Length: 216
Image (cartoon, rainbow, N blue to C red; front, side, top):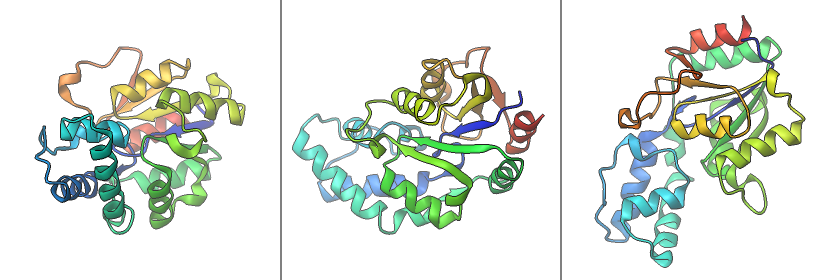
């Protein structure tokens, strides 16, 4: 599976940001006096912010959701993002792939502002040829599938030489929606209730195994 262009999801794939994200959600809900409609666990992480806040609050009230979002952003964008944890072996894998001449990209549902702050905080900014979020584009794209399609188009990437790496079913379906090969990692936020991944998805148990497959 030798590939040159590797597009990575971020949360649950390269980093564990669950402690800081969940703390931000708890802070936002507390500030607005809203009791969580579902447990604050890592399973809620992944979808775009407003969708997650809708699920957590159990409300579709736009004014409430906007207020929750502002509280979350104020918490996460100033100090919360600094608590991001890098999965073991991930830094070594990214450095090795870059050294091997691979072109690396980020495609995440996280907002662009904290994404760029995290990349700078971790010293990863120079490793990636492009860092993309839904709101990178103006107007913002509606889905990760659309975002990946824009990345492929903007960089003129050849499907046979490209790969998307993620940890959730949404990632795999977003890749497949673009005819792009997908690699699923097992150390992220996939909910077991989501079911068994399709047989055509390559599954990797460690960053070392993923690196070897990409460079084989």
